[in-house]
Length: 163
Image (cartoon, rainbow, N blue to C red; front, side):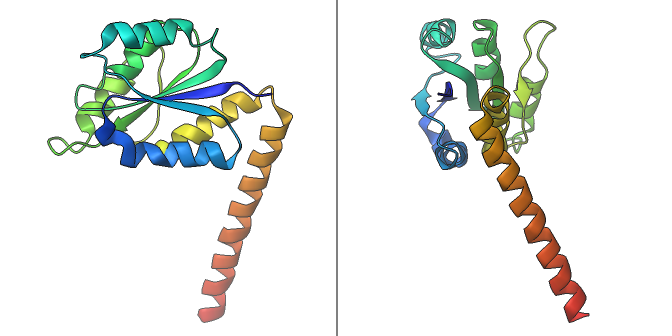
């Protein structure tokens, strides 16, 4: 049985973006827990969650945050599990602030970072990490990539036929 994925968002306003990750995880049959925790407003809660995540059956943590976006880094500082950051687009700097805050981690505290609002890819990256030791997930990923290839080929054939 695969490990669980934790999906942590800094605010409930991040849920519309984060749903993409939740839906991808469910599509692959990966159990996930979703929580709201803030690096700034509930730092002790976030730290304690990260410290106990491995013992609680998690294999990867996904952290979504906007603006200052320190959540992924705070979680990564308190666990040896891989952490994937989703920078959330805000109204002020279109998510560039969150992207830089998430990706610019100091040496020794890595955070894998996907595109601004890239929740689907965060989930797929988490699934790929779990698939290192889960052949069932690896097979599902192979299927997904094969289907994507078939879709592109069909679109190309459609364009060629119309020209």
